[in-house]
Image (cartoon, rainbow, N blue to C red):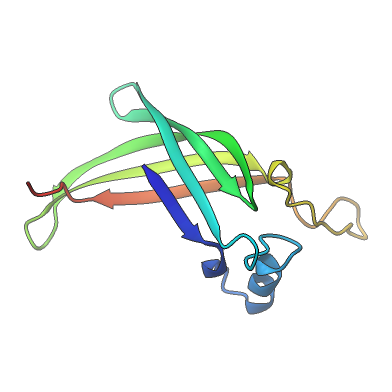
Length: 129
C-alpha cells in the first residue's frame, strides 16, 4: 500500500502558518511536493490490532516507521455497501526528515516540538470482482 499526500494541501485553518509550513523552513513544497508512506509488512497484534511497517518520505528523506493500527469494525453504509474502518497512529521526529526550523521562546524552550504525531482514519469498501 502506498499513500501520497500533496504537501501543498496542508491546512491548519491558519493561512500564515500554512504558508510558513509550505516554505523552505519546513516542507519546501516547490522542491518536495509530496509526502509518502509505502508499506512493507503487516503483522497482527491481538484480535483487532496490527503493526503496519513501511517507509515514510518527508522533505526528500525516507525513514522506516511503524503505524499502530486498530480495526474499528465493519458496517453497511446508507447505500448498502459494506465498509470496514481502521485508525492508524505513529510518532516521528521531524528533525530526522530535515525539518530543523525553530524559534527560541522568551520564557525558555522552543516554539516547535520535535515529535510529530501522525494519525489516519480510513474507511474502505471491498473491491467488486
